[in-house]
Length: 326
Ligand SMILES: Nc1ncnc2c1ncn2[C@@H]1O[C@H](COP(=O)(O)OP(=O)(O)OP(=O)(O)O)[C@@H](O)[C@H]1O
Ligand SMILES: [Mg+2]
Image 1 (spheres, helix red, strand yellow):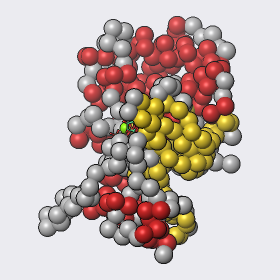
Image 2 (image 1 turned 60 degrees about the vertical axis):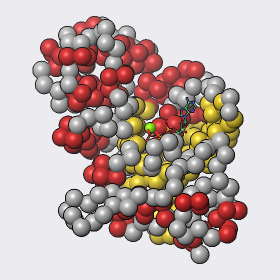
Image 3 (image 1 turned 120 degrees about the vertical axis):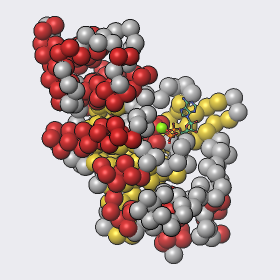
């Protein structure tokens, strides 16, 4: 059994202008201890997928059309409120893109950490006192390498730098001792040098705590630095899933190749990045067959008619593409 198993998961958003199927048959496995990156252009459904693991997409307008999500063997889509609460507070820790949004400006870091810890304790039935919360908060802030955690507890979010705030959010995500850490663009809002430090921290944490990591990003450089396996998404579908080195050295799906070709190579000044022609489809009226076919240089008649299934092209390397398989 894998820690996380997603099978044929489909999710749509209903709106005045119609229904958009933003996740269209996601198949994904994450093994305990793995670090997996999810990449793809803006709007391809990375965040919606990440939120789906904790059923955080607001419903309505979100509507599950089918499929299954299992975490540690438990059926996430069938969970009642108590089980879901336990999952959110313990099993899966979540770090989001914009640290400013997820910290409340009117409470100190200490108050917000205590609130998170109180919720976790509530979920496990424990009743620790204020002193225990304080000690645990300090330990968590130290774990994310924040200096002077004792005095940090008395500060308000706006007095912290973006990098520090992101570390606080990572500490909060770790508070419930999760088995899976889901980080959705955890460094996008940070400047480049701070990005590096936060990524290094995540790498150290997952190694030290033997955490499983699901990292969502549109930055292939970030994925290469952190993840062992990469899942490439396009318009709500997984098009390629492979060990990171294979994604970089031997990408198979035309979309993955396009993504890689679009990355500027600083070590080769002669290299001119080329974009992928066309734009991501309207998910209310997606192309039939393979959703990538209108932009695909290898498109064949079958690509317009039949959706390609994921198939193994090498060990642990799966691709959903008619052209690659023919
Ligand atoms: N609450 C919502 N209501 C309606 N549509 C939504 C909602 N949340 C997301 N969507 C739609 O779902 C699709 C996927 O969005 P998502 O945020 O997952 O993209 P993403 O891959 O994370 O992009 P980015 O790289 O910009 O973060 C988009 O078309 C988006 O407009
Ligand atoms: Mg996103």
